[in-house]
Length: 194
Image (cartoon, rainbow, N blue to C red):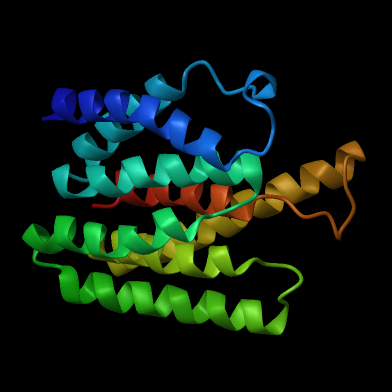
């Protein structure tokens, strides 16, 4: 199953590259994509299949796509995020944990929605919509995985912001693609949950 998931990730990596390119405003010859995007997609899909199980591979591939698009364009497109909700819900159905997944998604959506309402200049609404998706995937594993995903995403984003400050490449008002760090924070939550 792990090899099959990695193959899916490998195949999807090429599609992720094309999808991300469609949101990039730079000319095609000026785009600098990581040469190992297909490999990254395959490794993430295989790792998630091994540690979390086959129902989570769908989320893993969607997460790689959203992370790449967000990192490159600072956009979390509704065309990917919104259809991902029913797709991930259907993939999680066999786990028997769909009610908890939906509750976790609603909880993360509410928390990030409140953060967005309090400081809309500091967070994009795409991050709010992404939070619900992350909440669904991580809560299906356990409530602890949900808390881990939320904490790790915030911690990774804070560390990146701190690195920008310390290197002089930004100040405390510098915007960066936070969704990528939210998604990176979900990986340990899915792979280390028991």
